[in-house]
Image 1 (cartoon, chains in turn blue, brown):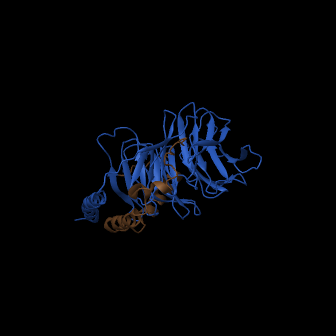
Image 2 (cartoon, chains in turn yellow, brown):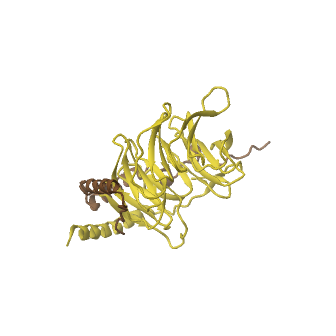
Image 3 (cartoon, one colour):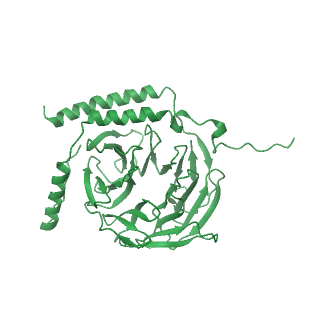
Length: 300
Length: 73
């Protein structure tokens, strides 16, 4: 038996083992109850949302050209920021909570300083360079941001110097999302070429490529420990990939789910994988979902 | 699992870079799936008891709990 056949056989046995272990954990039925519905603040589709690292504030962006920061405990709007572009694909909080970033169809990543002391929020930096729309970004810190784009590349830029490293090339389709590894300078990207790639930021190179999906990968999320990541795709499945095994460990699909999966997020322990258009807070307490009916909902 | 379709294209420089990348990726050390999956499972088991989605949140410490309206006595 070749090693590949051996690995497949072990993988099958482990799939059953993992399934049984999950069953053993699920002695109670987990149901998500709707906890809070935030007041309707967006007039058009919500395209993106992200939690701040305090697990209390969250930012949402929508096609009505506004970024709104909500206090999820009180459901009050903290900031409402009109944008130059009406088409916003993604928004992101810096880990410090001092900056917000969002994109526009102008392919520029704009950051907004939230702690100006004047009460109004303004654009603090702009990062250009991509030749296609920005699909996703994540702050490494207040000054560095990793971006992914429809121009099939990812890039790491320094906001204060408005400069970028040479782009990360290799994908052959629009890069739709990225996820930073916990505690390291690695990140994974998912693209319309149905592959995910692991990138090394300091070295500026691709370390590994993961295939298996049959269509565009829309959402990607690192496991709470940086050994693995999950992907959500237009092929209506989520998959779990392991970095050290360099392959897919599992495919998650359900007969009732025939639509594209746009976003994935792990719960704090990694036991649960949530899918849709959503985000789980850093402290693992709640998940917020944003949808095309323009409501943001918080679940726990 | 479908095999990777590699786009070599007609540009020789691009083709060399693609092959070089593939060689590098082919040469990495791999851990057996059994070990990889066991490690992930172990992490999940260890963390499960502190995962609010699994163990629940006591109402007293849940900041998202619906607040009861005040009643005027």
